[in-house]
Image (cartoon, rainbow, N blue to C red; front, side, top):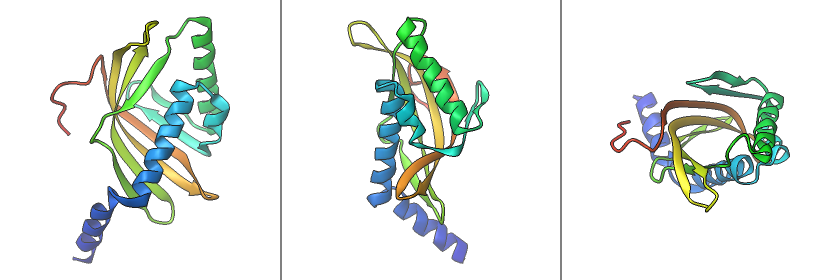
Length: 163
Protein backbone atom coordinates (compact mmCIF):
# COMPACT_ATOMS: atom_id res chain seq x y z
CA UNK A 1 0.00 0.00 0.00
CA UNK A 2 2.82 2.40 0.85
CA UNK A 3 4.42 1.68 -2.54
CA UNK A 4 1.19 2.55 -4.34
CA UNK A 5 0.86 5.78 -2.37
CA UNK A 6 4.45 6.72 -3.16
CA UNK A 7 3.95 6.00 -6.85
CA UNK A 8 0.74 8.01 -6.96
CA UNK A 9 2.39 10.95 -5.23
CA UNK A 10 5.37 10.84 -7.58
CA UNK A 11 3.17 10.67 -10.68
CA UNK A 12 1.07 13.60 -9.52
CA UNK A 13 4.15 15.74 -8.93
CA UNK A 14 6.03 14.52 -11.99
CA UNK A 15 4.54 16.74 -14.64
CA UNK A 16 4.42 20.09 -12.93
CA UNK A 17 6.62 22.49 -11.09
CA UNK A 18 10.23 23.48 -11.18
CA UNK A 19 11.63 20.06 -12.12
CA UNK A 20 9.61 19.91 -15.32
CA UNK A 21 10.61 23.45 -16.30
CA UNK A 22 14.28 22.73 -15.59
CA UNK A 23 14.34 19.51 -17.62
CA UNK A 24 12.36 21.06 -20.46
CA UNK A 25 14.90 23.92 -20.57
CA UNK A 26 17.86 21.51 -20.46
CA UNK A 27 16.28 19.45 -23.26
CA UNK A 28 15.71 22.56 -25.40
CA UNK A 29 19.28 23.77 -24.83
CA UNK A 30 20.77 20.39 -25.74
CA UNK A 31 18.79 19.97 -28.95
CA UNK A 32 19.47 23.59 -29.95
CA UNK A 33 23.21 22.91 -29.56
CA UNK A 34 22.94 19.70 -31.61
CA UNK A 35 20.59 20.81 -34.39
CA UNK A 36 20.23 24.59 -34.51
CA UNK A 37 23.81 25.67 -33.77
CA UNK A 38 25.68 22.43 -34.51
CA UNK A 39 28.00 23.14 -31.57
CA UNK A 40 29.82 19.99 -30.34
CA UNK A 41 31.64 21.86 -27.56
CA UNK A 42 28.35 23.10 -26.10
CA UNK A 43 27.01 19.54 -26.30
CA UNK A 44 30.08 18.29 -24.42
CA UNK A 45 29.22 20.61 -21.53
CA UNK A 46 25.67 19.18 -21.35
CA UNK A 47 26.34 15.43 -21.05
CA UNK A 48 28.00 13.23 -18.44
CA UNK A 49 31.40 11.63 -19.01
CA UNK A 50 29.76 8.17 -18.85
CA UNK A 51 27.01 9.18 -21.31
CA UNK A 52 25.31 6.36 -23.24
CA UNK A 53 22.92 6.51 -26.21
CA UNK A 54 20.80 3.57 -27.38
CA UNK A 55 18.87 3.71 -30.66
CA UNK A 56 16.38 1.11 -31.86
CA UNK A 57 17.68 1.22 -35.46
CA UNK A 58 21.41 1.64 -34.84
CA UNK A 59 22.05 0.00 -31.47
CA UNK A 60 24.34 1.61 -28.91
CA UNK A 61 25.64 4.64 -30.78
CA UNK A 62 27.60 6.22 -27.94
CA UNK A 63 29.29 4.68 -24.92
CA UNK A 64 30.89 7.88 -23.63
CA UNK A 65 30.71 11.65 -23.86
CA UNK A 66 33.68 11.53 -26.23
CA UNK A 67 31.84 9.11 -28.58
CA UNK A 68 28.78 11.35 -28.67
CA UNK A 69 30.68 14.61 -29.16
CA UNK A 70 32.72 13.00 -31.96
CA UNK A 71 29.50 11.87 -33.69
CA UNK A 72 27.99 15.37 -33.40
CA UNK A 73 31.19 16.97 -34.72
CA UNK A 74 31.22 14.56 -37.67
CA UNK A 75 27.61 15.40 -38.50
CA UNK A 76 28.35 19.12 -38.32
CA UNK A 77 31.31 18.71 -40.66
CA UNK A 78 29.20 16.72 -43.14
CA UNK A 79 26.61 19.52 -43.05
CA UNK A 80 29.30 22.11 -43.81
CA UNK A 81 30.51 19.99 -46.72
CA UNK A 82 26.96 19.59 -48.04
CA UNK A 83 26.94 15.80 -47.57
CA UNK A 84 24.28 15.88 -44.82
CA UNK A 85 21.28 18.16 -44.63
CA UNK A 86 20.58 20.65 -41.86
CA UNK A 87 17.98 19.17 -39.50
CA UNK A 88 15.63 20.47 -36.86
CA UNK A 89 14.04 18.66 -33.91
CA UNK A 90 10.64 19.48 -32.46
CA UNK A 91 9.22 18.11 -29.24
CA UNK A 92 5.65 16.97 -29.92
CA UNK A 93 3.38 19.23 -27.82
CA UNK A 94 1.62 17.47 -24.96
CA UNK A 95 3.93 14.43 -24.90
CA UNK A 96 6.57 15.53 -22.39
CA UNK A 97 6.58 13.75 -19.04
CA UNK A 98 9.18 14.29 -16.31
CA UNK A 99 9.65 12.10 -13.26
CA UNK A 100 12.04 12.66 -10.33
CA UNK A 101 14.66 9.99 -9.74
CA UNK A 102 15.61 10.19 -6.07
CA UNK A 103 19.24 10.98 -5.33
CA UNK A 104 20.06 11.05 -9.04
CA UNK A 105 18.03 13.42 -11.18
CA UNK A 106 15.09 13.04 -13.51
CA UNK A 107 13.61 10.84 -16.19
CA UNK A 108 12.24 12.64 -19.24
CA UNK A 109 9.97 10.88 -21.72
CA UNK A 110 8.23 12.13 -24.81
CA UNK A 111 7.88 12.12 -28.55
CA UNK A 112 9.74 14.19 -31.09
CA UNK A 113 9.82 14.85 -34.79
CA UNK A 114 12.77 15.62 -37.03
CA UNK A 115 12.76 17.75 -40.14
CA UNK A 116 15.01 18.58 -43.04
CA UNK A 117 15.50 22.35 -43.27
CA UNK A 118 15.01 23.24 -46.93
CA UNK A 119 16.88 26.08 -48.64
CA UNK A 120 13.78 28.30 -48.39
CA UNK A 121 13.59 27.65 -44.63
CA UNK A 122 10.60 25.33 -44.84
CA UNK A 123 10.64 22.06 -42.92
CA UNK A 124 10.20 18.63 -44.51
CA UNK A 125 9.37 15.81 -42.03
CA UNK A 126 12.04 13.10 -42.01
CA UNK A 127 11.40 11.04 -38.87
CA UNK A 128 9.30 10.58 -35.74
CA UNK A 129 10.38 8.78 -32.56
CA UNK A 130 9.78 8.35 -28.87
CA UNK A 131 12.50 8.86 -26.29
CA UNK A 132 13.45 8.35 -22.66
CA UNK A 133 16.30 10.43 -21.26
CA UNK A 134 17.89 10.19 -17.86
CA UNK A 135 19.25 13.47 -16.54
CA UNK A 136 21.74 13.72 -13.67
CA UNK A 137 22.04 16.81 -11.53
CA UNK A 138 25.72 17.49 -11.06
CA UNK A 139 27.26 20.64 -9.62
CA UNK A 140 23.95 22.46 -9.86
CA UNK A 141 23.61 21.66 -13.57
CA UNK A 142 21.45 19.15 -15.42
CA UNK A 143 23.58 16.79 -17.52
CA UNK A 144 22.19 14.17 -19.86
CA UNK A 145 23.41 10.71 -18.84
CA UNK A 146 21.38 8.17 -20.84
CA UNK A 147 19.23 8.26 -23.97
CA UNK A 148 16.95 5.56 -25.29
CA UNK A 149 15.49 6.54 -28.66
CA UNK A 150 12.91 4.12 -30.02
CA UNK A 151 9.84 3.53 -32.19
CA UNK A 152 11.36 5.41 -35.13
CA UNK A 153 9.16 5.94 -38.15
CA UNK A 154 10.46 7.50 -41.36
CA UNK A 155 8.53 10.52 -42.56
CA UNK A 156 5.97 12.53 -40.64
CA UNK A 157 4.47 11.59 -37.29
CA UNK A 158 1.84 8.87 -37.74
CA UNK A 159 -1.66 10.33 -37.45
CA UNK A 160 -2.90 8.05 -34.67
CA UNK A 161 0.22 6.91 -32.82
CA UNK A 162 -0.99 4.97 -29.78
CA UNK A 163 1.03 4.98 -26.53
